Image 1: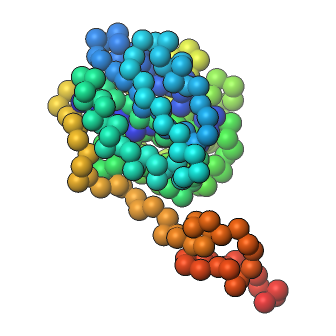
Image 2: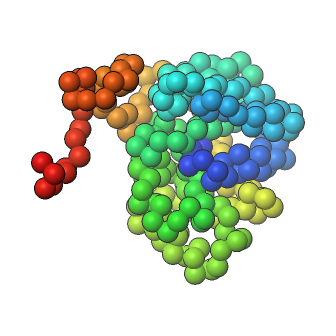
Length: 232
């Protein structure tokens, strides 16, 4: 089974890209399924189900969505194997620019859009810088110059990645993307023992553990202070 992780900032077009990928995989007679991770709510699973594929949905609730992803990916892969999938797409919530759910030896795709701002690639951490493929969307509503500047910004922070422009509405570029991320000789039937590409934040502070009171006397564990200069 090909295991693929698709991540990216909210509203970047992840779901639109995945729906076009599903069609491409189905046209190639591949059995594809999707595991959708989100925080509080999503109805993307209904969109995928309408395409006639197996879908699994997980909401992290009060937990960090990327921690939730990593804590559950083993069971999700087992679900994909039981459904005899050729391709299992896992879609992360993509909310934290510090975290990354990417796993070593598992294909990682980051979706980012042209409208997010020219400096956005510099603001996104391992979710962008450690992806194998970066898909840029919404190129049809910006100029050629803006597309090139944005793509250049992505290449500067992740020079190793394959960068593609894909139209989430028309599907232009989706077939080519599907051929890049699916490999006949790639088989991942378990992630047990595999490692993340990037460590999670080193933060277990009093607020992680439920503290709500503000003030230095209530702050324990890993705490980092802003450099306030003359205010010291």
